[in-house]
Image (cartoon, rainbow over the protein chains, first blue to last red):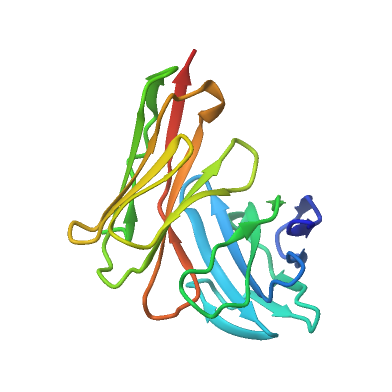
Length: 115
Length: 112
């Protein structure tokens, strides 16, 4: 079974630009979560989607948005990039059981650098 | 107070020793507890999960949960240099918020 696939692996952008990151979950998984990881803040929850619906959102500004498609693939978008948005963005998928026991399986991440 | 707290380390142990990693959490309603291992430059990898009080063993790994003390730990027996990584504790809430809260991680160094 293929794992979680994230593209691109690396991105370099300048302040003010916008960026779109893509994530394909494990086959059969319907939940996709996004996390931001920085050395100072660790792993911070961005949002989670299930069956094209956002079920929860973390404490990030509205510049961060996401969506999920009918095939469970997900994208996240960051508009008006700031230097502080430089981070590793991780996507994780989990099974379709709507319980708190869902295990997350992470992709390799997208390393975003904002110059 | 952080929701999930871990000592950042590094925790340095000799090869063959037992490494003990600790994590405390603040939400008494937390139900599920996970340990992830993250090598430098790589993504987190799930290595253990535990839902009930007590111990859960899987190979060289043992997860321990004490809900009364809001404490979860990970023991690594016969530590190997390949175990050197950052270990992340994650907690899932009871309110079905569909997210994991991660600690900042403990860096483990296993000396040959």
